Image (tube, rainbow, N blue to C red; front, side, top):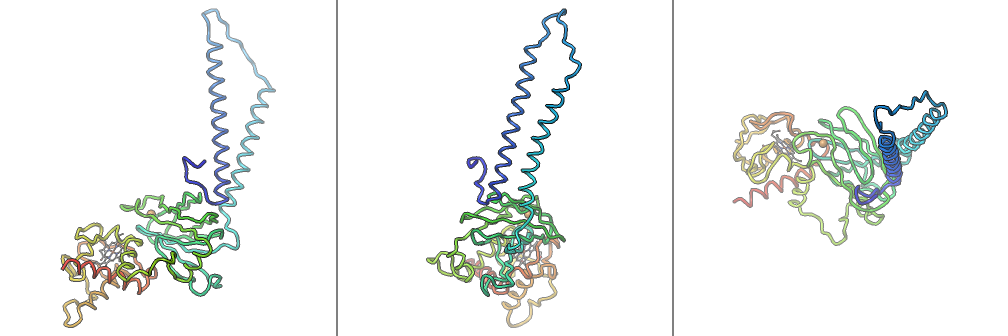
Length: 336
Ligand code: HEC
Ligand SMILES: [Cu+2]
């Protein structure tokens, strides 16, 4: 079953595939059998002429019983096989490791919940955007919620899919048996950049997982990112890119180009920051950007509607915001 759908890398996914495969085999068998018999009888009992008398059959109890009992048994077998996989899919094992998932326009973020410090002091509360890292062979439970509209979490290789809705937690769980990187899709149309709401689950072997929890580069040959690189990385992973260009074009939000110099945008709405004050204007703009990322509604740029940009308070750390600002500054530098 590998050529036309992605390989399953979970045990449950393999079982779901088997149920699906047998359903398809049964459907094809009965389709051919019923239609074949029908076509055969159509030809065999075609009326030969006006004198050809039709055979009058009044009923056959044996036949009635057979074609009631046999399909009933088949349907019961399908039900038992299906409900078994379904129940297991819906029931996370007790020892599952919890990860909080937040969906918002148009990105995913993941927060590790490790209150007992099973993985050391470093992991509890860590938030990563777009790319989720998990250890191989571990039961993982997603606790999911949307910050805005309806989304849906779909990981084809794990055979799991579940809606992500505002004001309600939904769940799914999986245990990936094969290290590798697997796609995450949003499968609930959620606006303009819905198709760009992508992510990956990276299933790590033990050694790589150790490096991840200790905040080391996953590949020992990699050097740590510079602040500008880290800022650009965050810009892509949180999908700021979906709404903010860096080349001067206005898309859903204002472009980041010229932001430090406060070019080509109308700040007359923004009361919280006094950009005209003498002294450190750079610091004023830095604080304005930080506030705009945490609480966009608090200071809307003129000409853009409220309710577009999601609030990143609690999702992006101050340190990461500093990297994003360094990245925005680097854009303006290359212009000069
Ligand atoms: C869904 C679209 C969307 C996403 C995603 C988004 N923004 Fe925005 N952003 C907007 C809109 C629309 C505005 C203008 C209205 C406002 O000020 O909130 C804006 C305004 C801003 C501003 C003020 C810009 C200015 O010119 O004064 C900053 C800074 C900003 N966003 C940073 C970010 C960063 C950083 C990210 C990613 C972590 C991000 N945005 C993700 C839509 C978005
Ligand atoms: Cu979505």
